[in-house]
Length: 54
Image (cartoon, rainbow, N blue to C red; front, top):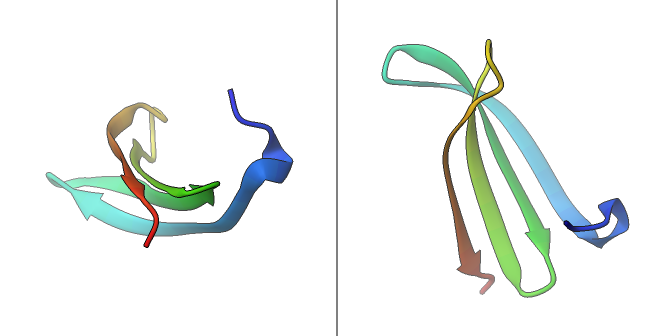
């Protein structure tokens, strides 16, 4: 589990995926960028990935 103060460049946008409303969340921790698609009604994580930050 990451600590809140390790997170930088947090960005949250509204979007749509497969006909449903989602939150598109992006943030950086250390040398990594994380991306999450979260269902706006149920808060279920629909998809996520982690990449080395360029």
